[in-house]
Image (cartoon, rainbow, N blue to C red; front, side, top):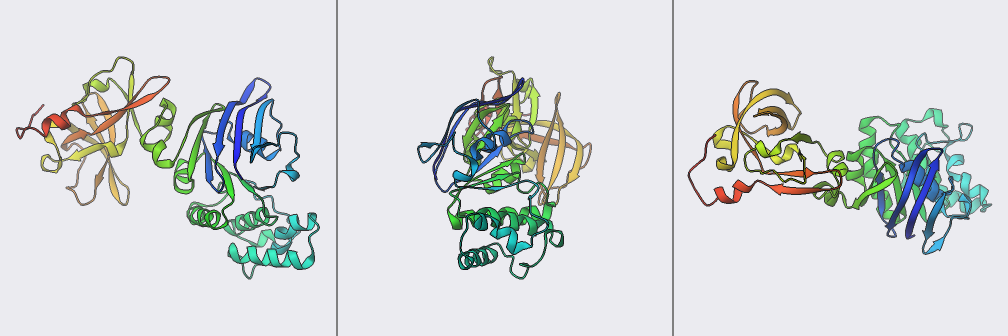
Length: 356
């Protein structure tokens, strides 16, 4: 199913939950609605489902406006954050619920439910009740129940929020594989950027009821179009007076900069790829992260967080190091742009190191 949302608005009293939101979703795509809590993501999802009525704007499924269609006529499967399983029904009965409502034959119900039990890995659990299942198993039942009536669109509201971290990571991979296998258009709401980046084909960043940016996870991470997206996605050092860092100049329009840890090269002199574009710093804090060291380093008046590979020389608090910043996002209230270290190119033409 192809989804088009045009200038969708919704207010609750003085709160603008959706402010002229527009986007298109291609058939078969898995889309993440990502943003901070209270940003309007769930309201947009509920309007698409028909559970909330928009104040204005249109929702089109395959080019047809569905604003006046009730939820049961929209061909949607919905997975709620808290599973919303029927406690008095076992796994088989929960999954078959939508098919029973549609008055499908007993034979058809059994065939479809058994098919979904195999697809979701719930074999052997058909007669168990929700309170006899783990969180991950309950979520799989909720997915299977939503898929049973063969919806054209699957909507998921914070589908992994109630599950512990280890199981959540396992279910992310499982969900992505399952959606690809079924080819059903899907939209899921999350405030977890790692989850959205890992699972979604495309991400729609929602903030204060508006679309900040839509694109693939790679596009949004590497080319944020607004200051909010640059700050919200990934780990960031947000600084002023960025022109005091070696290799960068002040751009009048942009008052602040964001420097991601992976933009920073840190180490002893022989570990820096381009010493002429680097400057001195002092290690202020060191944290072991398993696959790397997280280093807090003081560079002039700035305190920056960077990563340091385990195969490099170990750094300790108070060590004097070299710090090279490859690039940064500079921004104002409206947009952000990427600025490269201007000394990298110049330094590549000379072999004489420059010291500060």
